[in-house]
Image (cartoon, rainbow, N blue to C red):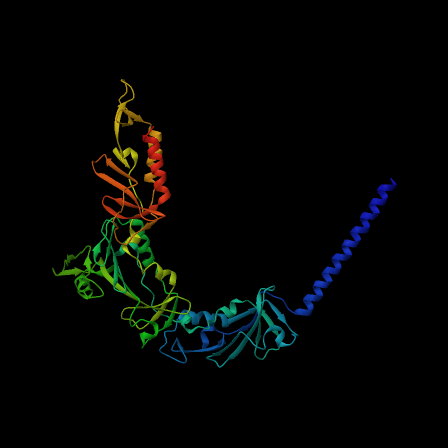
Length: 508
């Protein structure tokens, strides 16, 4: 009983101590809050103006000064009225200035240097049509409070506002430019892509059935993988301008565009809707070097007789027209970041494209598109296999044997002469070959030297044949000659494993 009473007293003492500690923490927080802020309100509007009445904006940021004026409802660069100002960007600025809200107000701030307001990161001024003016300076960012310090001219208080306020004002004039973009092109609309670089031309043609043909310097290449061609086409459709440099360039040599590093030409089609009476004009208008002849997919002309007059009227209907177009992109020199300057043919605008994008477009050769597969086709599609290793040769043939006299279903069995080869063992060795892939592909065919380490000829069910032989190329690779073409290099160890497994299978 005595122990219980003692435990109860101790518990009451601990509870009282916790309550005192809680009160101390609350008072400390209140004191800190009161010392820093006399007002805290997430919706404290500290400046407002009708954004539509703002007629001039100027600001300094990142050491640059920009100014804009509004005339007859349109915003202009005050220093260059011909500059293509993006109107949406200026609308964003006016909306930001229209209602400025703070999350905290410091009625009695310390020295401005404590908030970075003695050397602000942004100074913004505006003038409204009614003569109202205001100036805002933005200082340091307070990461803990999630905002930046701001001061308004004529107001002694310092405010904490969202960091988005400063983000609305770009210091690069070209981030505020309304300039051209690379056209939106879908993969299935492309008919031809040609990349000319340093006298070398790589061309990919899309056929109507979705297949691709690869040409190098005008010569059609064989055995090109459709996946590689499709990847290249996707790189073209994904072209975007990383940034803009100049809207009215008068000296292309500054960007290496007088003698481009490469020219990328894309022929594609778009679908447009025109009135049936304009289809002929549409075809004529698009028969130019840069825009090819348009062809109507369908045409319709409806006529109706007016009952009262007997006159015939022609009703104009909309029709779908396929228009063939072409865009030529010139790739210039590299900037300090390694990205490339670019300009579209016939345009004075200069842009920047990322180095990663250009890497996918230029410097490609037909060998980059050749399938690295050594043997396509499954063992079940083969009817015979001939193997030569050194002076030894084997002929394997497939036979279909009925599983029983009463069953019509047949089982596939392989024989070397009269000796049956276990299908599981043959399948394992066959996978050594069918699973092999080239690690390198030569630009031009090589001439095999020396004796082949192994030669394999597979005759297929359709009576076509694939003959593959492997000869030493260097210390790391063997040259695979496939139906007379020797351009693929395979790992030496893969060939050695094939020889070892095939020898073990056939010399049992």
